[in-house]
Amino acid sequence: MTVLSKPVSGYAAAIATFSHSLLTSPLAIVIVVSLVVGLLMVVLFGYTSDQKAIGVAKDQLKAHLLAVRLYRDQIPVVMGSYGKILRGTGRYLKLAFKPLLYVIVPITLLMVQIDRYLGQMPIPPNAPFLLTVRLGEPSSNVRASEQSLAIDAMNDVSIDLPPEIKMTAPPVHINADNEIVWRLAGSKEGRYTVKVALGGQSAGKAVCVGDDLPRISTIRLRGQFWERMFSSAEPALPENSPIESISINYPDRNIEIAGYGMNWIWLFFILSMVAGFIFKEILGIQI
Image 1 (cartoon, rainbow, N blue to C red):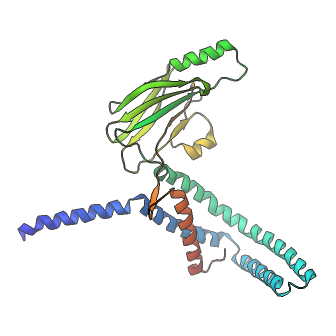
Image 2 (spheres, helix red, strand yellow):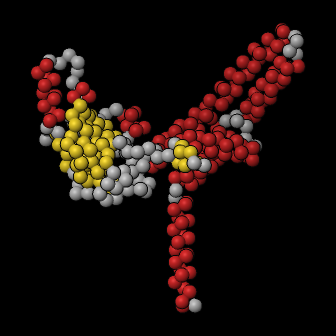
Image 3 (cartoon, rainbow, N blue to C red):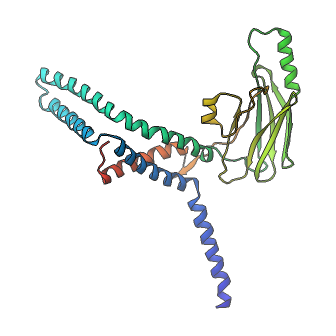
């Protein structure tokens, strides 16, 4: 028994590791979230809608569609049925709009948060990536001397790197876009901060290196509230900062399904719709 305990414990540890990695894989997360969202979507729609009125509206639409088929040789009846179908469709959409609004808003916010984890992959160790700093653009009617000052400001931009991240090429200045691009590489897994300095001010940008599921922010912005809501997971840059944005070109994450790579949002949309139709039949909710 003593001899067998080590192999048995080793197999148990391997099985536990495999189960944990399977349950925390992007595919498993999307499947679970889709099922939960599909159920919540149907239940929330049922509680916030007039189920009796929706049922009546759907029955009337079915009756008018049936009349079109039965009386297709009687033009006045068919035309009248088409008019009733249009009015019935408008009545149904009116009944469904408010519940759909209650459903869509929280689901959209949830999808934005999930995309922070499943939308992009962290930078693989020792793989090159680009850090792009964009300065505030001068207006088109500024004088040439001010344009020259803006170009000089680009030359003054510097970055402070942690020891685990190295610069692999000199920075490239793109004057037309007011951008400076650095090519960097991380030697060790982890979450790091790269600091960008200009004019006595500095701003940090988080960099994720590894292969797990960290919360990723591809860009850090100054102002632009609504764009930050959907595309950034970091605090806004100071309003008085000369830096408009700092971004990193993280690789997109594709979830493999039967040999095909798919963005998680498409898979989530398909699975949540299928789950919603199944749960609505089980719960008897009119949609």
